[in-house]
Image (cartoon, rainbow, N blue to C red; front, side):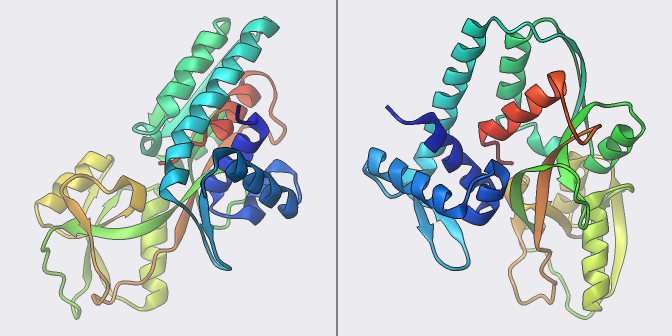
Amino acid sequence: MFNPALLQTFLVVVQTRSFTQAADRLGLRQSTVSQHIRKLEEEAGRRLFLRDTHSVATTPDGEAMIELARGILSANDRAQRYFAGSQLRGRLRFGTSEDFVTSRLPDVLRDFVRTHPLVEFELTVGRSAQLNERLQRGELDLICGKRAPGDERGRVVSRDRLTWVSASGYPLAPMVPVPLILFSPPSIMREIALATLERSGRLWRIVCTSDSLSGLRAASLAGLGITVVSEGLIPAGLTEIPGGHGLPDLGLVEFVVTGRDKAMHGPAAELADAILASGIRV
């Protein structure tokens, strides 16, 4: 019988890729997080993480534990809510970026709606920058999407590396402006890509803009240029551009859950906690 507290710590470490960040989110000491992981590995009889001074990575057994931990915590949560006779009420206008459509978020939303039938739930799918604008205007209560660099709002759901991608074999010449396929503004990915190229001194030009990820993919497959995606969301048919082309490193992007108010309550707080507990990764 795996201890749910240990499983919760495990999933947060997976999400943050850091024992220190996991400790901050859980309100624990880093030594306590390390102890939780050690106990879980003892219970499982397997090593779940590979650690060094710079990185944390899951072992094959750790990868297998992710889905198992999610299932155990989800079943435990449903049982607690059922026997507690939860009667959460109210309206919840929730927005999510396309990034999470193919993650476990639909399962989390299904469980939330089933568990809280008296909550009037409304879902909006859009781009992160637009969702943030709607949140600020009071048109949404809770959003899940990318966080712009320097923005401190929201609670981190996961982090992913940004990467340059193109159609396989695309001939990217080193001495000409980089042909970019980007989301139309406002777009966090667009801002990151352009700011990174400007800092590196690499010339660029925009050859295509689109309002959807499928549009970026189509233009890239047509060989119009290159685009930027998170590593976990590289579209089918596109490949990461290898080093040696003079493209600057784009760093990490953070995916966060953000409420309209800093102190969330009611349905918004309940769904935010469920998303964070689920161990969702893009």
